[in-house]
Amino acid sequence: MHSTGPSTELSDSWQLTQFAEAPSLSTFMLSLAILPPEYIRGYAGSKFPIYVWINKLLHPPSIAADFANLTGRIYDEIEQILGSESLQLKEINLIGVNEFNGSQSFGTVFIGMEEWKKSDEMHKVSIIAKSLIRQWIGGLITIASRSEICFQEDLVQYLANKIVYRLFASDHLKIESYRLSEYVKVQMAETFFAPGESLSLSVDASIPQIQSHCALKGVIQLESLESILGEATFLSKITSLISQHKFRTYRIESLLEHLRMHLIDGSINLSQVFEFWRKNGGIPNLFVEKLDEKIRLTQINRNRQSQIGNYLWAPMPLWPLRISIRNLSLPVNFMVSQGLEMAPIDKKILALNNFDFENLYRVNYDQNTWERIHQSMSESPEFFTARSRAQLINDFCYFYSLGEIGDNADKIRRNFLQLIRNEAESFDLCEFYAFWCIAGNKRKISLKKDSRKRIMQFMPKVYSSLSNRENFACFEPPLLGNDTASNTANALCQTVFGSECL
Image (cartoon, rainbow, N blue to C red):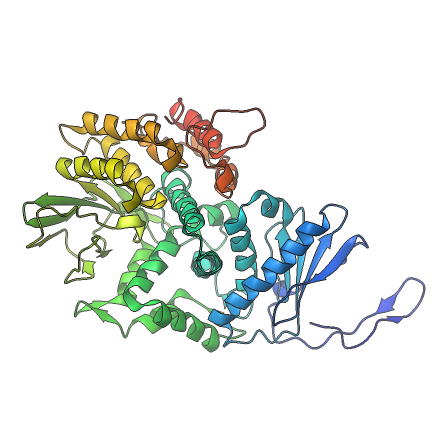
C-alpha cells in the first residue's frame, strides 16, 4: 500500500514510515523491498499508477523506458478484461531483479530481468502480463491448495495469451511464432518431463513439478471451453469467479459451478467434461479415416497408461473429445464414444481434424490422407500456420514411430523429411517435433530414476530456448556460445536417444 505521509527520522539509524491499511490478505502476499540507491523509479504510462524500478548500473535507460512503456500498455489491456474487479490498491510497483525465485506479493511485482532480456517481444509481454494478472488470480483470489496450483497457473497463462494476441494483432507472423513455441512446450512436457501425468499435483509439489505440469496443456483445455462458450461468455465466468471469491480462496469446483448449467449436444454437461480433462493424464489419440463420402473417427488409446488424479495409474480411458474439422460445420461438439461416423462428406475435401492443435489430442490419418497432407503442404503452404505444420509433422512422426501409419509409411516419412530440408525456413523448431521420425523412431523413453533425473535437468534450458524467435531456425548449425533451440533439442535427443534429433 501507499505511505500515508513522509517518513519520520527517529534517530541516526532509524526512520518510521506509516502505510495505508491493506485489505485482509494471506501473510505470504506481504513483501518488503529495500532497494539500493542505484535503483531508479520510472512511471508506466497507464490509467493506473504503476511504478517501475530498474537498476541503472545494470540496465541502460532504454531498457527501463521500454519496460515501463510496455507495462503500461499491458496493464490497460488486462484491465479491459478484469477491470470490473478492483484490486483495491493505490499503486503497483514492478521491480526488476536479476536473481528471482518466482514469488509474488500483492501490489509488488518482481520481474526476473535475465529471463526478460533473453526473450523476444511476445514473450516479454507474456512475462509481464502473467505477473500483473497474478495480482487478481493469486492475489485478489488465491487457490485453496497447492495440489490445484495448475488450475491457477493455467488461468493466468490463458489470460496472458489473450494480452499477447491483442498487442500483436497486426502482426500475424509474430503471433504464429508465439503459438508455435507454446505448442512445442506442451509437447516437450508431455513427452519428456511429465508423460502421462495429470494436472492434479500433491500438496507438497516441487517447483520443477509445477513447471512441468502447469501453464501448458491446461491452457489448451481452457481454450477448448472458450471455443464452445464463446470468448465473452467464458471471460465473464472468470470475472465472476474473482468477484465471488475476493480476498478468499477458491478451487477448481468454483469454476465447475459456473459450467454446470451448460449442456452441450443435448446431454453432455460441460462441467463434467472439464473435470475429466483435469483429472486424467496424457494426451489421447484419434484415428481419422476418409472413406469416399464418409469420415470415420476412432479413439485409439489401447495399451496406454495414464495417471488419474495425483497417484493412481491405469489404462487410459476414453476421453470426451472436442471434435473440429477444418472447413466443415459439424452436427456435434463432442465425441464421447470410441467411434463416430459422419456422412455425407465431399470426396475432395482434405478433412483436417483438430487443426492448429486447438484441442488436446493427437490425430492419425489413413495413408491417402497423409499423402494429400504432404502434397498440400508442398503446393499450398499458405494454408498452414507454423503451429499446424509442426502439429502435423509431430503427429505423423509419433504414429510412424509406433508403426501405425501403414504400408507406405517409409515413403511418406521420406517425403515429409525432404520437405522439411527443402523448406527449412517454414519449419522453425523442427528438431523439437520431427525427432520421432529419426532419433526416436521405434524407441522408448526410459522411465528409470537416473534417466528421468537427467531429462529433467534439460527442462529449464528447453523452456528458455523457446522464448526467443531469433533462435528458432531449423537445422541451425552449432556455433560456439550460440544457445539456439536447435542445439538444445539435439542435446536432449543425444541424452534420451543417443543421437541428434534429425
